[in-house]
Amino acid sequence: MADTELLSGGKYVESAAKVRGRARLNPLFVLFLYLGCLATGSTGASAAAPGRDAADVVLRNAKIYTVDAVRSWADSLAIRGDRIVFVGSNSEAARFIGGNTKVIDLGGRFVLPGFHDRHVHPVTGGVELSQCDLNSSQDSAEVFSRLRACAARLGDRPWLLGGGWDLPLFPGGVADRRELDVIVADRPAALYSADGHSVWVNSKALALAGIDSATTDPVGGRIERDRDGAPIGTLREAAADLIDPFLPESSPAELLAGLRLAVERAHAFGIVALTEASAGPETIAAYDALDHRGELGLRVVASQHLGPEDGAAAIPGLVALRAAAHAPHVRATAVKLFADGVIEGGTASLLEPYVGRPGSGIANWSADQLREAIAALDRERFQIHVHAIGDRAIRDTLDGLAAARKANGARDARPLLAHIQLFHPGDIPRFRELGVVADFQPLWAWFDPYIRDLTEPFLGPERSRWLYPIRTMAATGAILAAGSDWSVSSMNPLAAIEVAITRCDPGLTSCDRPWIPEERVDLATMLAAYTIGGAYAGFEEKESGSLEAGKLADLIVLDRDLFAIPPGEISAARVLVTMFEGRIVFGDWSALQKEAAGEGK
Image 1: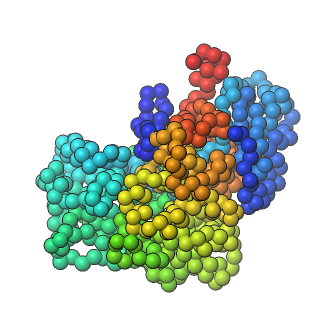
Image 2: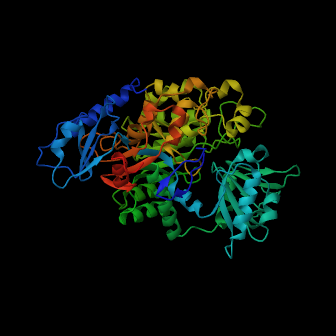
Image 3: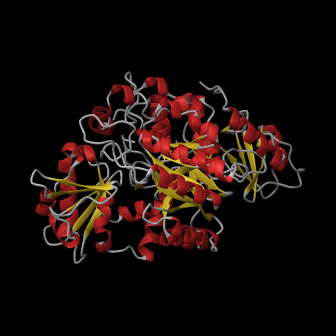
């Protein structure tokens, strides 16, 4: 499920990891899309300006799935500046063609609105690409092989840093310091797990941080230990923070370089807007700097971080950073809270105890603390963005949002709950009732080793039925968005869309044993989640998320019609062109025109 590198010719291809018709429409989508149409004076194939007001670009002979309120299709689209000025038929588009109009014959190519990723870590993920990259290792032997190669390249760097190792590659999800010591003994090493909730350290790092048998587990964290009580080398949640003061900080130049790599990847996957899932001042500064250089090509909502250790005293600082001058495409308008950890590490907060594991996980905030923090942030009119995986974490967060609404009054707050893996079914309807955006990571909804080895065995079959209930959530009328959580997993929306539809390994082209098949959704639902639903989650549904006259020209061209292929082939589709606000940020028109003319095949 990992992303591949940028191949020659400027195209990303996903390695083997990662019907036309209308779906039943979510009534809330219809409502806010209709309002958006009124605001732009558009209803899909709209009236346009006279022919003398020629467009800059006209796309013709395309299969355009607009994702407007009625999910209409079109053949042609015209762009002037950064805006769409017409969507409709080829014949009607002729009046937008002037002497300087670039006319692109797409030869039946499939066109969609650009994708919105509403939970992703571009800066840290990009920096990680320049460190020891363990993502997509197939077994522990490959992990050790990569580590040896990284150690050989260290030079005089004081630490071995990196990450991306998958917990199921090690017994019980626990990596051993002694195996790391064999490879790196002369300096400290810290390698974060793919899910970001554990760190694997060697003996040098433990000694430097003063972590030994006498060290107690911090609140909200766990030090994995051997039979004698000595730290084994895996630190969970807040325990990972014990080494933070000793880690070398990334420089502004390194953060900017990492962001550039991430932006390149996002554009190649058709992404035009995103929510940065955990942003401090240095991260936001990197976004601002890249946008001021004209190189960002994304609209970014930056979620500032608030932890239970910060308390209400930190909120004025968040307000000040939000109010500071930012680049045109950067808004620091959300705040991220971690309600719990992850099931595979036994740190997700559950309503009932784990099976075969002690306790019910780790709630990073008490229910009262969480309620108070949510109410305080809501009073300051922040968008609240919560990591919530276990059913207890989800319920506590919903309770906090309900209390904030009661205390502060209802408003268009659009709180965002991300991951939302395990539900008590009684809490699913509350998303629509409270106006909460359900931000799933659909790529995780199949029977992979995380589910097989480290999730279902510790939940039992009754609770496991309610893992990633995407279809049940959609049926309530709640707004769905989607995110990748990259670099935790692939950034490719097409792989995630496939998994949501099939509930199977995206590396398969066909699958006869879907995981929890009753939670499969259709293609239209998932395209909406990644386009208009994501736009709604970012407060920009009147500007983006569908292809309609008056909206920004955010669009992608794919190499195949997703409605015309088996669902198991969706992840193999490639983005050929990504356009952000009327300018191409990935691909080019020339190759497509040659192919449409029969020259490039």
